[in-house]
Figure 1 (spheres, rainbow, N blue to C red):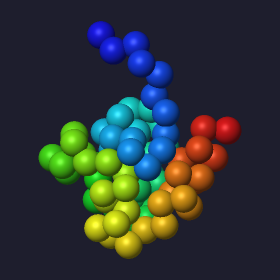
Figure 2: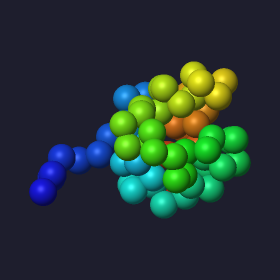
Figure 3: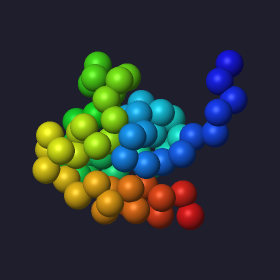
Length: 69
């Protein structure tokens, strides 16, 4: 079992982000990111997917962080 604390940043794994941020699915969908159900979510980082879909990484991270408040 991995006891490492999850830290949200540009190198965060997509699947781990979804597991740690309950509203991540909603936020990804709203931003046009088809991460949910994608096989690549297991190994891709946030920086990979935002580059591919032309999303502002800092804005996405802030939106995810704000969703936990």
